[in-house]
Length: 364
Image (cartoon, rainbow, N blue to C red):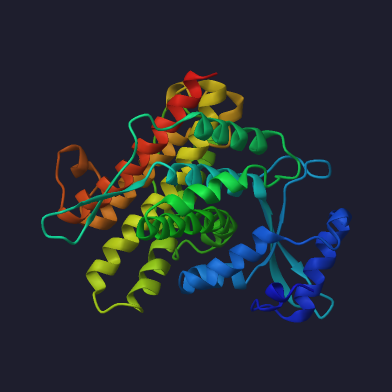
């Protein structure tokens, strides 16, 4: 048994039962290493108590092949081991994790260290070339999309370019970029954890989710509205869980709690948005830029709202948490210094990704 797995909080009998159940469904995985599972366990321990509990308290396994399982993002259920212990089992689709990681790493190639510094001498100035992205970056994005859609094994093709770009980036910015990448992967997992918690909330109305989303649309049918609401609420609560965990982890390492909170807010918001923005790029390949009114009549959007709507819900939730104001105040121009900083951090990353997406779309 892989040593990483045995470091989880599960009993060994539950670990063995989870592995046996997995191999019964995927016998070809016998003896293969689950690198994504091991990575999630590792970074879950790094980023605070909630991410640690979410990874250590669940038997995790990941797959990418479609020959024995329809294309999916996750399946979560409870299993019982031979000793009678009930434990959570999570089967994760690797594709979305690899897509988000590749896109985020491509964007790191935008940054180059400048010799210029501010007058105060404290902050380095970072900039990217005017002709970015180049053909290499565009091809990397197309490769990421092809793998997400078609590659049954998710190979490490062209990894050397991604790592080469990371080595050329300013060290402090590269470290932050890598941290956001890790949080993005944990956000995807926490989103699925939130879905698994929905039956608990339905049975315990006095214990509502931490963030409650409202969606009123006369154009949507009841089932579609419930599905869309479920997805947006899972996004916002996953982000909130990530925020609390990252804040705790960062405040343990510094004596500046307010600065740690702002940094945690910024990094968590960037992480969640890179996930949804990456999925929005995939949507755009099939449907173009799509709004709520158009999406409601497309079968592919029966269970999931368009990512633009999901990103807006997440933005409104972030605004409320940062400012303490209702999200309607955002439309009235109310802001705070903290919100401006977080919006600027996220906005700069969005601009870089949009440049990459637009270049890829123009070359089709």
